[in-house]
Length: 165
Image (cartoon, rainbow, N blue to C red):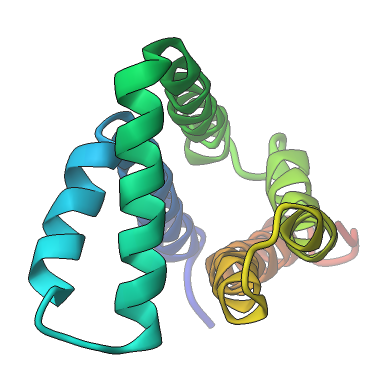
């Protein structure tokens, strides 16, 4: 059986991974037009449906940003939200037992991606295949969060063997 310290270190590594993923996800939302331009250029030789979708999104975003740059402010808030949520997970880093609710919150948020992707995606005319890609972020997020959740249960049992989380 692992020691309390080993379990805590493992939790911290997974939390650091998750925080880093949230930060990267948030930071990339600030420069969306530039990043889509790179992907559009990179895929330009391809005649795949992915290229046509990326190109359509890139042209629409570029056109919108030229005509109505204030709408990009919404992406700034999206990026900011990712950064703020990442900060919340620092609480788990500090005290995983006390802040296990943050992991539960994250797992619930990951599950909420599915109805949002399918409902809003359908209303906004997003291709179903892209809605599935969006849903994959919920699945990808659930994996480390569930691992962390189980490790916190293990930590709780190691500290208080007769007390369940």
